[in-house]
Amino acid sequence: MGMIAERGLEKLTMAALGGEVGMSSGHLLYYFRSKDELLLRALEWSEGLLGTERGLLLTRAAPARERLDAYVDLYVPEGHRDPHWTLWLEVWNRSQNADDDARDRQAAIEGAWHRDLVALIAEGVSRGEFRPVDPDRLATRLRALLDGFSIHVAIGLRGTDRGQVLGHVREFLDEALRPQAPSKAPPDA
Image (cartoon, rainbow, N blue to C red; front, side, top):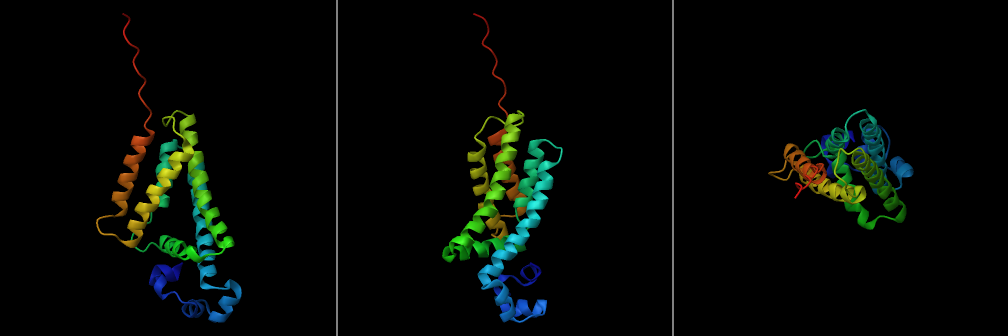
């Protein structure tokens, strides 16, 4: 991850990585079989760290919306060339030719984010903090929105920065989750 952050993926070769960690590229290939496997393993490691952080923020004593905003903050890249998102983008790109095992491992990573989001939305609905929504459907839509915006931030698309993205997402969540005001009973006739 340090090399990705410092140099980007285009300069991450097995030989360069081997030199950085003090072993030959052949030795790396012995352990990882391919660059694709190395990248997926690095992503799984990075996701493990994020999963721990996500678990802590989701289980803290705070309103569901505050924890949802923290989830979004964790999800969205810090900026252009964010190492975690750079790695994700490369793994996604390479997944077109990935074997079933690699696809299952990527799905497991995606599934963890999705399950946590569904549970958080369901909790907010059950506590009356959010309007009644289908938590799975809203989580699917929100993650698609987050992925699209996050790609823009990670690749440095002009006119899209992290602050703008967080604003758009919070506005979407306000519209989607704001509890509906109780309707007034009609006056007696």
